[in-house]
Every structure is written in structure tokens, then in C-alpha cells.
Image 1 (cartoon, helix red, strand yellow):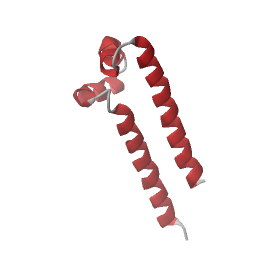
Image 2 (cartoon, rainbow, N blue to C red):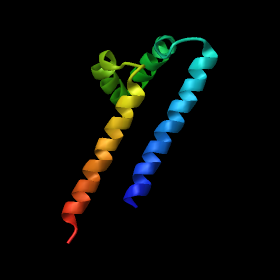
Image 3 (cartoon, helix red, strand yellow):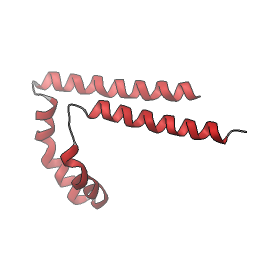
Length: 92
């Protein structure tokens, strides 16, 4: 089950990266340019959804569209490994 979980995370991330890569390539813009283009909509969503808005206002200056997939993969992998480590420690 652990290997299936890790493989699913890798495949999910790879699928997202492939889709984003195709969209960026087809747009003729960089990922950063596309992000800046949608930023007004993200800001609007932040106003409409207070919990999201709080997070967005605290983190938007740290968002780097060119690194977000690598960072997201790393974050997810670390959380999965943390959970597996906890699971192993709790086993009898």
C-alpha cells in the first residue's frame, strides 16, 4: 500500500506538470506571465472566501509559479513519508 501511495503521488504530480506544460506551451507565455494574468481572479476569490483569502494574503509574496510544482511535489512527499513513519512507529 505504501508503494502504491507513493506512485500515485508521483503520477498525479507528473500528470499536473504535463497538463500545465502543454497549456503554457500552447499559450506562448511563460508560467509566470500566465499566473500574473490570472492574479486578479485569484484576488477576487480571496475576497469571496475569507479562509482562502487569509492564506492567500499571507503567502502570495512567496508564490513562485516556476517552482510551485517542485515545491508541491516535495511538500506532498514529505507529508506522505511523515505519515508512513508515524504508521510504522505505531505498529506492534
